[in-house]
Length: 289
Image 1 (cartoon, one colour):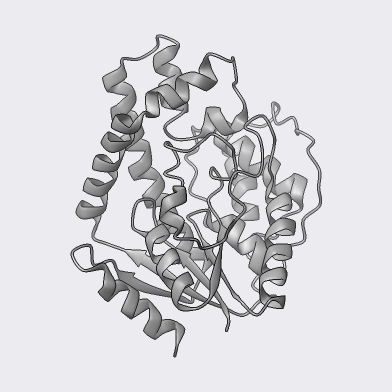
Image 2: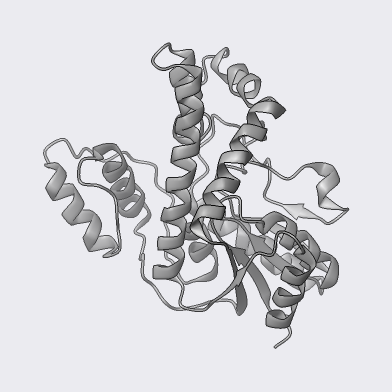
């Protein structure tokens, strides 16, 4: 059995499918959501609950503190070790998540070095930074005015010596992508954020804010950074919630762009929300081809 990889935008149903396929193919699930590595970031990341795991073994969830820096290098090393261990035991690794770059780093021959040196880009204009980004990845779609993201992208690439478009696989895998039409997805995302608020998202974020934690995982995580702006008195709670929805929708759009540009072997399935068993059957047919 090859590795099964389940990708797609936020909120589309990847977690549910991963559990169903794990039950069917004697699988163990490996997290590929870059925010779900961190302990305590539960509601805002839609992290799977214990009862939802249905006794399936899950790996690389809650493996570090929010103050830690968990890099692509760390994930590549840990994910490959986990894959090899699962295969050695005769079981099926099922990688699931929306962080496409982490998935590529694990499955392809990316040469990464562990360095954590912040490079000074103060002498470069925004236009020059974007040009450098495009040299690493011609599909880079960061806006020229978003200097913070441009610098972060370059630091990641230059520190890790990342070969963004390396196409040499080191594992055999079957990739399934879950999708739905845009209006439905955006509606799902909006309702999901409302449910997160009902489930206690504000209290979850406040617990970190009250401790004075402003780590990278908190200050860049959707659902966390917006509420920090509310706690700082910069925006209203209504505006914060609207921003969470907006940024989640934008994330979904970026995820589609990355998956379609960086993977040419995705088997896309339209999620059937009224009869999810049909989605499981369609995914199973792809696995068993």
